[in-house]
Image 1 (cartoon, one colour):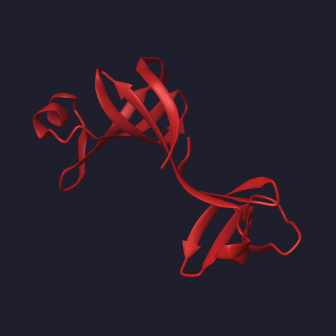
Image 2 (cartoon, rainbow, N blue to C red):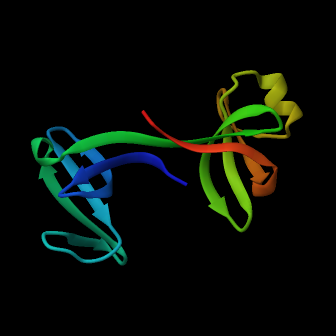
Length: 120
C-alpha cells in the first residue's frame, strides 16, 4: 500500500521526498549514486528539474460503507484512517482517536471494498 511521494527518473519510479529545490529518491538496494542511509535503504538526491515526474500517491478504500485512506498492511489486515469527518461514525466503527479529528483502526482485508491507488 502506498501513501507518499513517488518520482519518475530515467524510466523508473522511486519512493521520493521533496526537499526544497531537490528531490530525494529512495530504493531498497545499492545503485549508481545511491548512498546507504540504513540497512536496506539507499538515497540519491537530485535537483528537482532532473526528475521526470513527481506525484503524491494515496491508497483509498471503503470499509463498512465509509471512506478511508490505507496507511499500511499487515497479516490480512489494513491500517486505515477514516476520511468521512464525522466523529459519531468513527466512534460507531470502533476507531481509535489518533489526533484531533483523526480516527484510525485495523480493517480485515476481506471486508474492504473499492481498494485503489490515486495520484494526487
